[in-house]
Length: 195
Image 1 (cartoon, helix red, strand yellow):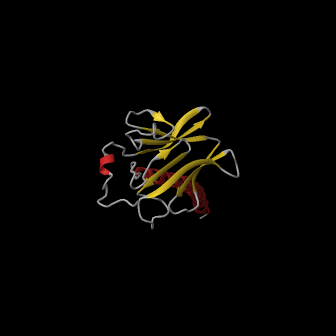
Image 2: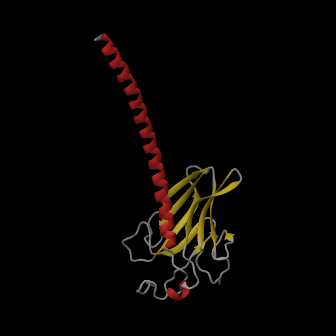
Image 3: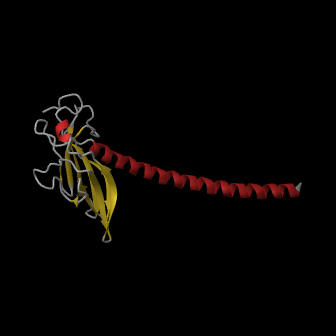
């Protein structure tokens, strides 16, 4: 009976150790997966709003204007003010955090709703910028490249980061920017755009 108790207690000790290790691994994986899911969701917000940007149109006021720190466009997929009629003007901006100048923030704002800007992502000790690429695949830091360019929306929009002198892409989104959209904008969704 003593031998059986000793063997049982050794087995229980082994089982408890592996159970403790398993729960610890599961908890750390859950945290890591939560962080990754949050990052992917934020990258999705960035992609969806910018993929839905409309080309330039004088009647509706739709225009895609961007610099290395700011993107303004008229989109059919805003994040916040979804109860307002579509399309709406939005802003993506990169700025230094007010409380810590070493932190860069990616901020989103619905301009038609006049809501407060929302911090979507924070980057520590990194130089973050927007970059754009058109049909010719040349990467530029402002859009439009020239004021009267035939291409009114870039094909690709990058969110890049420079860390220790090396630049890498954080997020990237492909935007449909074929010149034929200029003609199609007159009635793109079977309805007139608001003025």
